Amino acid sequence: MNDLRIVACASIKSFNLVFSDDGKSMHKPLAMKTYESINLKFNYRTPTFYKYKDLKKKYLNK
Image 1 (cartoon, rainbow, N blue to C red):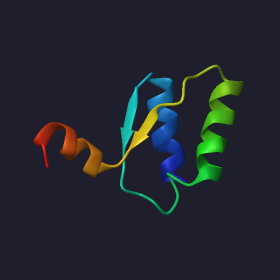
Image 2: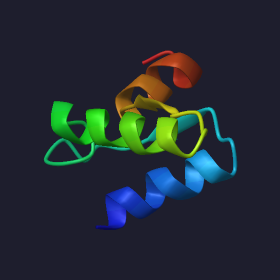
Image 3: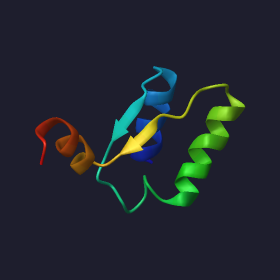
Image 4: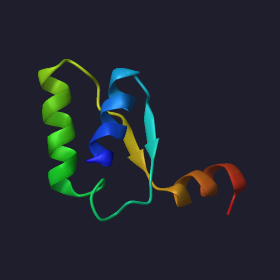
């Protein structure tokens, strides 16, 4: 449930990115389809999802 709240808040506030290492639920295909479906219904844009390692790689060159 917390994952849905995180994505809902990010969508409502028009955040472009969400970073998370929660591979058990947040990044699952069913969850992604659900986020997109609900956001489309309410005319919100779904943020792009990244893992923390992507953030470290981009900004810490690791």
